[in-house]
Length: 205
Image (cartoon, rainbow, N blue to C red):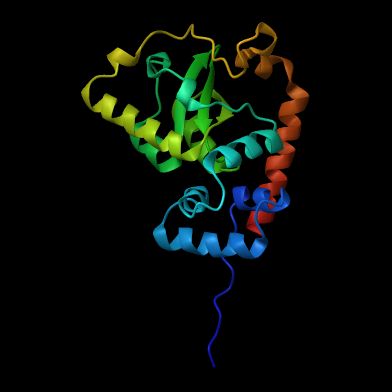
């Protein structure tokens, strides 16, 4: 008698997409199994399958967890901070340093439920992290570019830490200075942590 393999443990981002009714639990389990076989993150697998676009996942994640969203197409590589994440850590955790301001490192990440990645980067950098949600496919390309640049010279990427990351539109009222969000929104950050903990608690059951 044939036996069926048990469902794979779903990642936090998978559970969020189920809660947002973008995929069913059955679909999520199938994609998670594929991701495990390919040894890639769930988010990369679902984008490869063209089930949901990278942009849709990023926008939904940012809204669900209350993090800012950034389109990396509008970002200039020359604005990256001089102090960057170790290349191997960048590649394994899919995290990119965007801005260093007042001992807070703003990092681009496509899966904000990946707390292990954030903890690893925070330990290496010794700074408080503030996640910014980006599209997974664009993040991968940026990480590749930065790693290649580090192989030659990172000096060309250093323009200091005075650049203010704009995550909004062109109007002044839509411009977002992330540093202010960190200082002025402790309640928001507390709610973000509660939501992330709940998602990841479900993923570990």
